[in-house]
Length: 405
Image 1 (cartoon, rainbow, N blue to C red):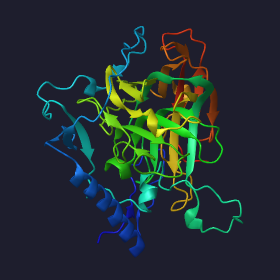
Image 2: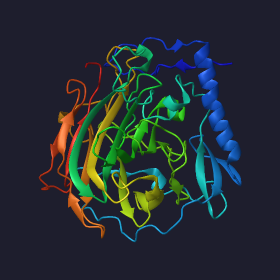
Image 3: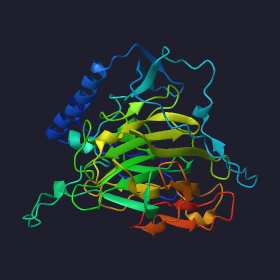
Image 4: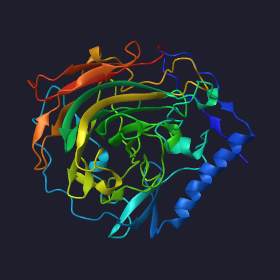
């Protein structure tokens, strides 16, 4: 039986010291790894796959009957003025090659993980969670004597959050290939729509963005991700919450854009690639549009009235790092965004632009004016411009190199 293993990224940036080697773990980790792999083997065996194809990047896709019910919103993508000084490029998957291998009509793609390459540690619940460890709510009678192995991982943010009743949000994320130091850490840029008061387990979210995480995808490249929680990240599983198609809940409509698809990365001082996202509550679903394509959605029946069933209470955009402080307590060198601070600006620092929230069920959009926050400003920062005086509307630069607390 192969043991779980935390791998180090061999492609260390010049700004960081060479990472220490990954480490093999014990027999219990071997058993947990086998449980995780068996979970996905069983899931793949249950799929009603009618075809299997391989992408140009080497990812395997199962083509299954489309499972998305209902029609998406009849809402056109926004017309954003062209900025000749800051010309962003759309993701290549928005214009697929005409000879790209696809499944039969009426089917949609589902990604298969390269199970031979991923070696996560921890339990199945840990693996399905947002980060290498599932969130735990401390019982009222806990005296702080729990095992150190149950300690939480550390999430580090540079984001702008607007508490406002909304029916969705939209905007553009500049995509990069950040260096992520360890296989069980991640770096991402995303949006959140959030419902609930923040107390206990009542927070509910729908999240979409670009993520680099070896344990999830088996490589160090950026991928489109979706995530949801119905219980403030405390439980993951079918109809409870989790990533992509790892758990049940998501309904896929598009045959060209899907959770987990590989994305193009921007070049320092060169081409800048963008991911355009819209999330909208419409009739029975939280719909997600990527570029000009409605990808699918989460049924509102997953959520409750105090959460996301009727509307959201927060629109949030920004970057996030997950730092596993249990196995490597030193500050992570995982990069956020481009790995450069906001002051470097266009084509050097990552950006998000034209962010707006939907103020009513009819689809009215208002510029996002969020409260900027940076939990670890020595490592990751955000610089906002919510004046609305440029073609980028509400926008900010974000990110940093890590390496310090």
